[in-house]
Structures are given as structure tokens and as C-alpha cells.
Image (tube, rainbow, N blue to C red; front, side, top):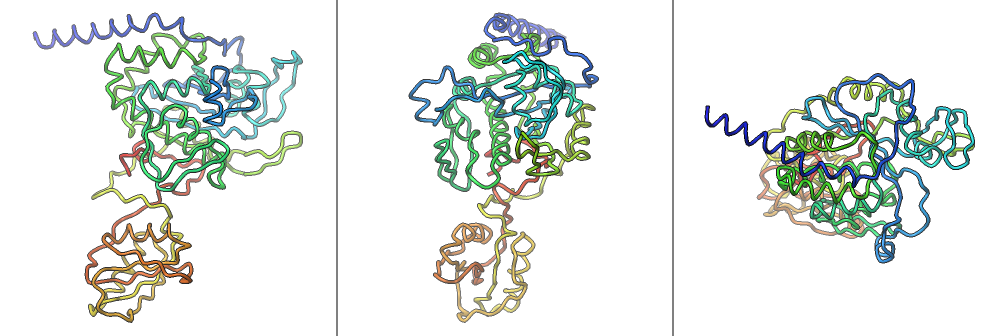
Length: 458
């Protein structure tokens, strides 16, 4: 009984300290009346929905930072990033849905905040709603499109993003392939990196790393957010009221939030996140039905898939997980490789006198996802000791992916061999290791958990 009483006192005292150290932070938050005079809104569901937008505001960026991180030019005063963050009613799950900034949208009737002119509802790209009607029009447009009631609004600009990352001591990101974007200046070699504020901003802004443009960028933003949650929940910050206050003060000093986002909401989020882990968070992008949907006067947009997106937003309204829990895989996690095995053509040869070895290797590689010829043959040299992966140097990334599935194998470049890689199985062959692409093709609407994309899964 004494132990229980002592524990109760500690818990109550901690709660009191938490409220005391955070109660002075309300004045640090820049406020916006995001929900003023809103009518005919969706019915509230369980849990809490926060519309988090990232703007291209850069008023407090220094000239050195502008040059170093390629932040020059005039801002468009639009939303670079738009996400609905749903915190479950039991505070044990966070669901993050990215809304592409080029989504086809139709605004409700509104008054243009710049010209004062009243507009009827009209089509535009979703990110343009902010420039035309600020946070209110953005929220109203999102609610009309999703029928999800937004409870709170949080606006993050370049400055607040960099501060958040820096005050946490940086965020760890892994990449199997080098990432280079001449527009943002991002230049990351393959490997694990701890990104500080400016470099992290380059990572989440880059759109010219591959042909997927904004959809690929949203995947990186989701991966970064998962890593940010991992950093915040594993560093002890959320368990220390004073540290939590310092982090919160640094972050909230340069964001804008709605009038109702105050101390109690901060404490609720802080206590919820104490129980979070990467596996508690799930990320997805609203399913796209049509790419390049042309709209007169608007341009090329992305049109949502009506049936799939409805199921997604139903889950948010009903406070349900976005996807069924995945069974925990048995054995070691697959090795991440730079090229999807499905894209790699492989010819297997038996370099030993062991009958059937070629077929065994071919079957095992095919089971792992490689496109084998299904026709193994005998090698000219039947006394190979160490398994060899022969490849044309033009396909060196594919060769590295194949070699990862054959632990201990030797890479052998052969000019002019062509796109088909060759495996010469040696006497050392034991098994094929499971591999999976580091950044698998991910259709819009695919749900991933945070623990599937943080570095611990590397």
C-alpha cells in the first residue's frame, strides 16, 4: 500500500510539474484563428485530427543558410506539405496521411484574403488554397474533400523545421543509394547519416532525385517523420519535463497554431508519445486514381481514387488502423538492396561437380524475387571454390543487390556481358539470403509502419 501510495504521489507530482513547466508556453506560440465562423463541418469522430502544413516561409533564414541550402527566391506563400495526423482515442497510435500538394481540389465559396473579392467554389491545386484563403480555406477544402473533421491546425515553415531537428540533436536517415539533387543541393552518399536542420530540410524538399517527383518526396517525408518520432521517443526527452519544455519552446517559438492548441493539448501529445515507438505510427499517401488530370486554368493535377480514398478516410473517422497488423517476420530481417530483385535477370551456372546445385541456387534466387532464367547450366570450370557474380559494369548496382543475396560471393566485372547477370555457384554455397529493395515501388495508398522505414530495419 505504501508503494502504491508513493507511486501515486510521484505520478501526480510529475503531472503537476509538467503542467507548471509548460503553462508559460502559450504566449510563445504564434496564433491563427483557423476555425473562425466555420459552419456545416463534418461530424467529429474519435481521436484527434491535426492538419499539419509545411509552408515555404523563410523570413528568418540567414543569407548563409539561403546559399548553403539553396533557399533563395521568393516564397509562393503556399503549402509545400499537407498531412492529416490522426492520434487515436487511446493515444497508442498515430496515423499520418499525406495529401499531395498537386491534388485536384474544389474550394468552397470564400473571400480572397489578398484582394477581398468573393469567389464561388472553383477548382485548383490543393496547395493553392493557402495562398488564396489562408489556413481557413485550406482546412475547409480538406474537410470538404475528406469529410474528416480537423480538430487542430499546425503550420511549420523552413525555420521551425530546422529548429526542431537541431534541438533534437539531428535525425538518423539511411539510404542504400546516393541521393543528389542539384535544385536543393542535397548530396548524400549511400549509408547512414545524422541530418541536422539544414540538411534535413534539403532531404524532405528534394523532388529531382528520380522520376517520381512529389510522390517520391512524400515517401521521404514520411520516412523522416518516422525517424523523428524514433529520435524523440528513444532519447528520453519525453520523460523529462524540463527537457520536454525546452524542446517544445524551441519548436513552438516559430510555428503557428490554432487558438485551441495549448498547454493541455501539448501535455496530451507528450504523454501519448511516451508510449509511442516507430511501430506505433503508420504512414500512407491518399490513393491516386489519375495522374496528370488536366484542368483548364489550373494545369496538370492528381485526382484521388474515389473508392480507395473513401475507405482510407472512413478509417480515420472511425479511429481504426489504416491497415491490418502485419505478422512479425520469422528469422533475420531481409537485407536492403539498391535494386529490386524483380528487375534483375540472372543466369545460374554450376561451378562444381555436385549434381543439382545449379537448380538449387536457381530455385532459391527465384524464391527471393530474382528473375532467373529457370534453366541453370554447367560452368566451363567445375572446380569453383567461391561463388562468383559476373556482371557488366553498367549494371553494378544490380550486381551489388545480387551479391547481397549470396553472402561471401565474389563480384567479377565483365565488360560487354549485357543486362543478364551470371552466378557461378561454388563449393562454398550454403544458402540464399533474403533481400528486399531499400525503397520499394510504393503505390499511393500503400500503408507502411514506422519501424519498416527507420534505420533499425537496415
